[in-house]
Length: 298
Image (cartoon, rainbow, N blue to C red; front, side, top):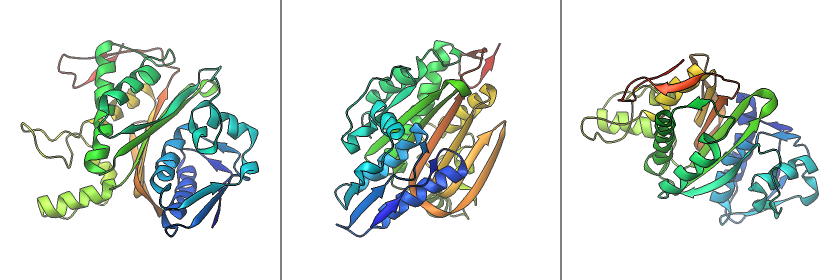
């Protein structure tokens, strides 16, 4: 089976759908099938979205015979893949990122939370392009991202988490994406509502999962967790950034204080979380109180 990649893959709804269609074809291939990826038409891919691409490639390596048309990858795409370490799948050697705009592609075992924390601190929070933040707020953001990371093996029932990002200086934008394959948000929310609560589940399951204190985790000391995405919503709202989540047949976006859910005709068997941070932000961000429940700009 030959799979042709689309002309453009980015973190717009249409761009995500285009990629998910490709990934779903890989997933639906029969065991031991020869699956050939043709990049001839691909002109652009947001580097951060390679997290989702890598998650599906990794999951299917031993199940199908994955190949690609060697001469089909343009020099521009090859350069990108070589700079962010995704070239490992295509035998491209690692090249130096002279402009320091790449957040390296990383595969982390679901149990290696300390390794992921170090990676996120070094490659994202400590970058000079990031808005100025107090150490306390950096720790809070790290804590929130680690909750998302921790949700992957707990809720997604997966063993690995895939992440990478890209800085777009001309757009004053930093993009970072975490992806995994496994149980989707919808599956977890439906299971939680039917088996635990005995109620009809909400229609927009990602929206439910991003509300404060909504979580399918077990209660611990009277708290259920579920704050990771909520706090990130608060931060990107002040920062004029955005969040996009794709899981199963839902794509949820949050921007300018508003959220939107779209249902798509294809399925991503896992979850993709993309955080877009506005780097043209001269504000200084701090936690507004010791409990860290809110943060403010001054």
